[in-house]
Image (cartoon, rainbow, N blue to C red; front, top):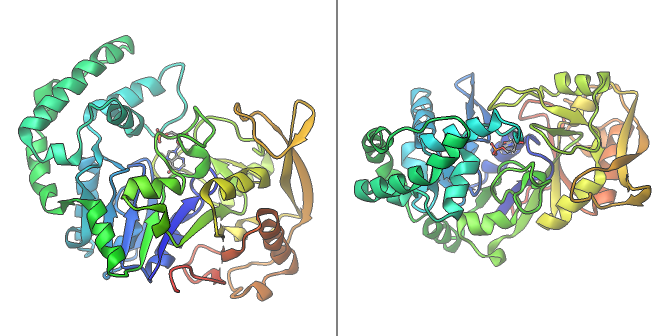
Length: 423
Ligand code: IMP
């Protein structure tokens, strides 16, 4: 048995879906511990591609139960639509999906506030799903938890309180809010549908640990979007780093056996904020097209750039990574040479530390590229020499091994050197 945390080491979109899917083959339980419908995982169900934002991708494996932990913010309308869509495709989610009674509920006014702010001067490029304002309500101790939602009277009171707190904010932003009745009228049907899935999720996870089950803690977004450790204020509002697995799923640090970082072979970012290795040129566009770098939730083109080793060393440290999954190496095939940022220059001084404002000039080293298609490479030895050297260079720079290398979109196009779920 093992409890393994999987966490994005960059700005999210590192190719989590495929890796989580692979690790879930050996998981009895998958727990999402942070974030909400701002995430997007592409699933292939019955030959059809579909995107889930809340339900963990582990739902496709019949033996796996899936838990939405208390660190999450959940839009119940989105959740129920995903369950219905999965139902239609023959995946019965209801009996294997558990929702924490302590998770917070995204309600229409959160989405209104998020969208109004994003049309103003202080926009940071959020996904406009109401995630930030919902976490604001949580921290301000006026949020509606899933547990509250199960009680009509308590919900009424909590919504009244939240709406009166948001009223001046929304008025100042030039918008308008729904009435209490407009919000609560729709919640009756939602309550009934959700009720059988609502539980004390931390207890359920604990029971699975005691029963020596294999558990995968699925992070969302990435280290550099973490509310505490990311490029603040251009971050999401949750603990996206490995520490979030403890608070967001309700386990102690001693119960985690391994932390795997997801590292894409180059870097991307969606939304505003610093990005030292960004490429605003033909190479950046090539990476975007070859890597299919368009947001799965919003469709926005992702910003692209070279690999950033100081940022990855930071992620290795903050998450206590034991190993990493190196994704989308195939996207770099065809480049004559590869630039890799090995340190930053800040105010003329070479440093490994990204300053608080994130403004740093990358110092690059050039590595040889390769032309071969990697998708048929089934071992590290079968990779072209330059591709293998690239992986080894990252292992050396981070001081941890590559446990997995992604060489193409297909599930089979993956080199696995170690599976932390198998002990
Ligand atoms: P929010 O999480 O919607 O509030 O957005 C805050 C920032 O996090 C924005 O820059 C978003 O683009 C970014 N973000 C949120 N979720 C994801 C994700 O799943 N992948 C990549 N970026 C994300």
